[in-house]
Length: 187
Ligand SMILES: [Zn+2]
Image 1 (tube, rainbow, N blue to C red):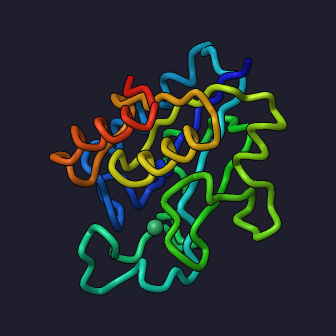
Image 2 (tube, rainbow, N blue to C red; image 1 turned 135 degrees about the horizontal axis):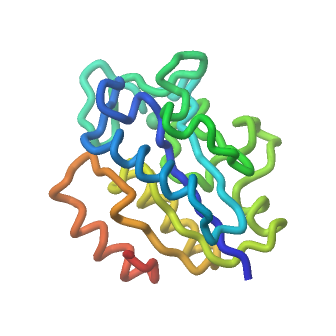
């Protein structure tokens, strides 16, 4: 058995001061960095990133913050980078998603964001991963979607809820309920 930590979208634009900053993002970045600075039990640690080139209606000048958003994580901008607290973390792989359309789940990502790049599910399988812990931003969007896909793909999946930050805080209890029903441990 192998356990992986999947760090979802802890990027400059999703933290305070970013184009789509989520309250608590900086704290989550620092806490994940601290977890990974000490000896930890993970056999693999990977990151996902939103990686937008031209994602169509995912961006809007009048965003509804459900299906459309202010432009964020545009490739080549500082906002697309991982949070500074995580830049020295030796991630085993980074999966980029959403080049030309919305992509909430890290399982839509590939190495380099390339259409023919290795997909997260294949990478985890090749590395003998059976158990997946998910943390990052945002609880109610990309963390949720990544955890649901992980469970669907057959991984024993947990969300490390204290290492997540939500766009809509009042939705978190419903997300926890939904994930629990999908056999994700809300940890
Ligand atoms: Zn996006």
